[in-house]
Image 1 (cartoon, helix red, strand yellow):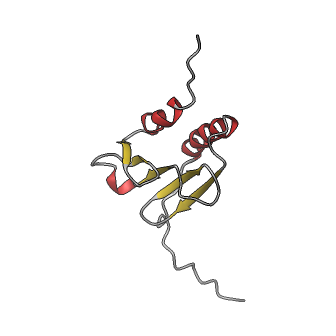
Image 2 (tube, one colour; image 1 turned 90 degrees about the vertical axis):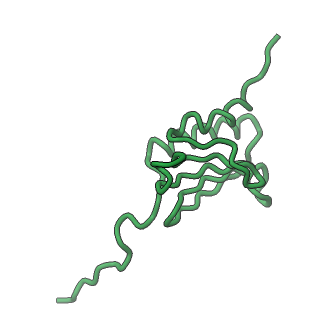
Length: 111
């Protein structure tokens, strides 16, 4: 019989979003698409961070980036919301407060 060689990448070498985290992010993204504010998204899963990028149009820099960096869990918090120029708008330990500035854009004043 053949010999099975294990894959060289170690388990846990890639940061990813959990199902509830991704569900919450995609729910907000869907509401922003319905409002006509976002058109496209991208997900980048790397060794240091998992990044969800939201675009107004497909051929430009992302309007918002939601980053998950587990290495910063015990410091500033592993979640960060960055704007188009890379400035950190919000950083924290939980996802809900990080998404609040984006959710505020959906609110409309009613007379």
